[in-house]
Amino acid sequence: MQPETTAKVASNAITKGDVLGAARIAGIQAAKRTSDLVPLCRPMLVGSVQVNFTIGDDFVEVEAQVETFDRTGVEMESLTACAVAALTVYDMCKSADKTMVIGGLCLWEKTGGSAGAWRRPDESQDGSGS
Image (cartoon, rainbow, N blue to C red):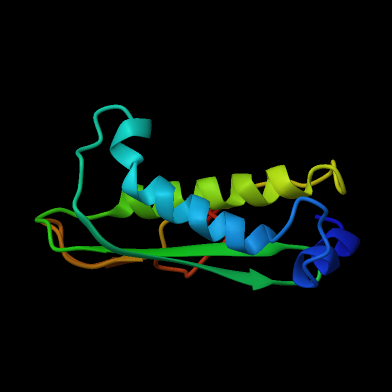
């Protein structure tokens, strides 16, 4: 996004309201409703959802952490939380910046579940492997 837009997000000056607060709520709701949004995704008992943001000069990074006591992982819930939180940022800022881009949605790490632990080998944040 344009640096001016990022500055408005950081200072809570977007006309629609608190961008990060709304995006956090949207991400949490999305994680809990993932099985309604993604076909064939198993409903999960979500124990906790954390959605956090890092504001840079020209970006807002979204990170979600989802926990469950179920027997399987919650990768889809985490990814859905990030995607919907990012879409909410876009929706709330689109009147100020039509050039925004959402990208780099990827899993960084998972623990538990039948497949066990996994961590992105190169710690790449952009999802492109570079």
